[in-house]
Image: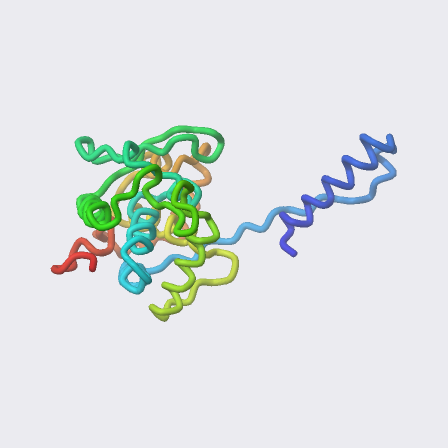
Length: 225
């Protein structure tokens, strides 16, 4: 197990023995383990494009594109509603994201085009990405993860174990950094509390890349099919 998982059990043991059984802390020889600091795997723009084009249907394609183009967490993407899309300002409002914080992130031209195409086809009501089985509920996180996994398999793109759909969010931040967008702006769009969290992308960004498109399909003449 990862050290972070081990620490959860260690903290539970501390709580039980120290707070419930009233053991002295000296009796507990359970030293906490340091967290692993692993750098995320970053895909190229072409690899992201392949994944999006390999999505099983328009709904899944639009979902994955939204996560990548706006840098959303999967939980934030599946709970989007139409009023969160502010096309006049070209922004997406994220309500009650991680840490119960609201924020705004970008809405790119090609993502807006894709969302309009999806809207005309699906006509979603309550949720932008409703569940297939329960239309009154939004798509589950597991459903989104499954859609991403299948798209990666069909696209022939290997995602390391433990990273999954969150890789698209990592790619969003890294590709923006490679375009010259400053860390503070990226931090705001990602909803990070500390700048140090965003700064990890300095270690994975390619310094030789000076101009990458924010969303991967904007150069596709036919758009998203």
